[in-house]
Length: 460
Image (tube, rainbow, N blue to C red; front, side, top):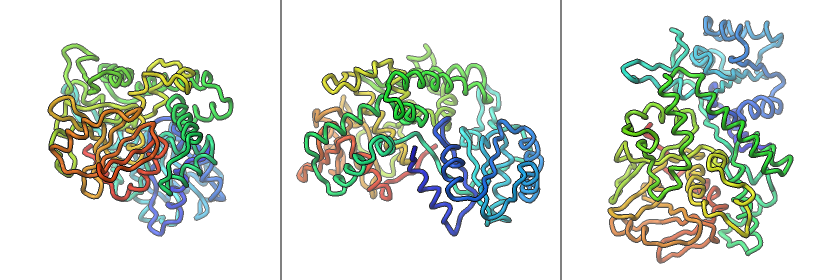
């Protein structure tokens, strides 16, 4: 399977200002496979691979010896390999040995010629969360006294599941290339290719972007086998929550949030309501659990902005927000939807609303664009708000054309800038209304086109 992140690794490899690289993301999104088995094999004569979860002796040694020279000498002996400028050193599951992150600072200072990558599932959680819960201090680290964050001394790469563009590239490379060419020309697809691209969108809604699930589907073409594998992965995500230092109460609340993303999106008011999870509980009772899930890249959170929008975008209310699953295949599994029915072109399931909104949220989040949504005084709302070139650009995500009433209400209070309608309809631009209609299969290309103009500042 080909991942677009390989280009990021190649750019890092060729960079004159290269530092040790920290790669983090959710569980089972293919970090190790990409770095060790693809990038490492292709670009290096030797690969030194350390799994801190499995290799206890190495973990204990590094915890007590953060000097790179000592680490290099130890690895050369235990791995029986010479470490030089043609070697890639990979520290996997680095959240199990946080002092290793401290050592990256000294690798950057004293061994600039070496290629060092550290990876982990929940590294960002370990680095950032230290707060009180039920009057007890919750510090997510390994208890070592010689841990110091190396932020500023390392390069960082966030990885996510496959975006739709990545999925399509692996599923039908020729169609991907055709769509990219047509988007660059701002062309309207004919009915045949438009229908074909829609078919792959619905397929992606069902399969999602977890590499293991995608591989199973690509190899077998079986939705049922992919679903069975997703059941196992879904359970693994829940089980992994027990591995980290949190109270039983917090663990239970993490699971409640994780299990209710779809049901809370599949309602008229899609704001996430804690009271629907646990009676008489408030947002503050679930604050830590939601932060944990966010930093673990298991969910994404979108914040409300109201009526007249001021830039830069900032959340206006901590208690009003929406939550999206970080993989749309997991959302499909959680919904209990029948996969075969869902992708049947003659019967597009009426439950597509939550999937459409979650899809757009993922395409934004995978490009590190923060999520905001707008609500007016009445029922008017727009699903996404972006700061592009210091202008407010809104995105309305609908299955088909739908009403423009919310956009009209929005423009009563805000300057008339570009508005985007993301739907199953064909590409088009209404100059008078400043309305761009993007079919779902063009959205990723458009976001890549404007990525250098979008404000990507995140509040937490």
